[in-house]
Structure formats: C-alpha cells, structure tokens
Image (cartoon, rainbow, N blue to C red):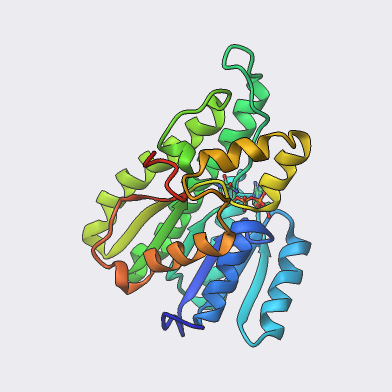
Length: 254
Ligand code: NAI
C-alpha cells in the first residue's frame, strides 16, 4: 500500500536489476514515482521495468556501469532529456569481493571494489547534484553498509569503500543542506539478496554464524531496506541530513 505521494517525481535507482535496488524501485513505483531502473545488466533491468509497468507503475530501464563516469554522465543526461528533472536518487550499485587476510588481499580486489562502491557513488552523486542544483531541490540516499560503521576480519577493502560512502555523504550533505538537497546514507545489515546467496554458496557454514551475529536472529529483507530509503527520500525526513542510518536488526548496536 502506498505511504507517500511521489506522483510527478522522478526517482533513479542504480543497481536496480535485483536485490535491494529492485525492491526499492518497486517501492518507489508503488508510491507513485516515475522510476528509472539503472544497472550494468541492462537486459535484466529492462525486464524488471516492464514488470513494474505491467503492474500499473511508471518505469524505464537505462543501462549504466557506475564505475565509468562517462556512462554515469550519459545516464543523467538521458534523464534530463526525458524528464527535465530528478527528485530522488538511490545510489545502491555495489559489489562484494572475496574476504581476504589484510596482508594478502590482491590489489585487483581493492581496485575493483573501490571503482564500483566508492568511485561509483562519487560519480553518481556528482552528476545527480548537477540536475538537483539547477532545480533547487532533491534527496539522495547513498548505500553504505554495516561495513561502513564497524570493522570485520577479512574485509579491509570492502569496508573501506563503505566507510568512504559515509564520508562523502556527510561532506556533500552539509554542502548541499542550504540548497534544499538532502543527502543521507543507509547502512544495511545482512540482507537476503542474490549477493548474500552467492556468498553463502561458497561458504554454506557461514549462515549459522551470520544468524548468530544478528540480535534479531534472522537476515533482513530487501523490502525492509526499501522502507528506510523511501522514508529518507520523503518529506517525513525533511530535517534529516548527512546521517548514516543503520537498518541492521541490531547488529551495530551490539
Ligand atoms: P546484488 O548483488 O544482489 O545486486 C546488486 C545490483 O547492482 C545487481 O543488479 C548488479 O548487476 C548491479 N551492479 C553491480 N555492479 C554494478 C555497476 N558497476 N554498475 C551498475 N550496476 C551494478 O546486491 P545487494 O545485496 O542488493 O546489494 C545492494 C547494495 O547494498 C550494495 O551496494 C551492497 O554493497 C549493499 N549492501 C548489501 C548488503 C547485503 O547483505 N545484501 C549489506 C550491506 C550493504
């Protein structure tokens, strides 16, 4: 059931083809927004956009690799050409790399995860802000992680990128607060998505450990993250700026 009235507003979600990005795209559409589902898997994003449209929502898929700034500039240029505005953006696209002893982590892992998770958010935010600055309004949510708030063994590169997302969010958040643009970050705990399923396939014993780590005793759902993203984008969060909001079943409180 819709909670917000996002009719007439344009929302961009990166990494929208599956997992948290897909659940958030569906939630934006349910609440009346025109949703741009962007993903480097353009075919899958296209199928999901068609499903939203078939269900009565307004959606469009545009392929983009967030690690490539030219691609990101083209994406925002297309949004500008089609709609002339961008009201909400969820910079969600991100990848994991295999856990590694900090003394052994290959440079290629560091570079891959940094290019998508850190440089990708930086590039998206930069080009989104150009549209929002022009119109004098907007809300951006960047996807960090519990890994942006705490450290865990084997995770130096990935957690480093997620800490960086919070730093960029705070800096740009204070910079754009006087210009009616709110920028916040979301920090999901362990969420049942294809990313986590892929990881568990290679380490099935990890599931018991992961459940134990969550005070709530279960994994989160992508829909539970979508709820928080929509709230951060909505007028209900009009005084919320530069926060890193944990949605993690109590993990970081523990
Ligand atoms: P997922 O792997 O299920 O989905 C990610 C989507 O991003 C995919 O559709 C993929 O094609 C797309 N993507 C990957 N690289 C891209 C690129 N360079 N350009 C454009 N799109 C790209 O992942 P999930 O679990 O939905 O995660 C989404 C975000 O949430 C990520 O930033 C992740 O780091 C973060 N997160 C996830 C947690 C979890 O437990 N699932 C926990 C904390 C944070």
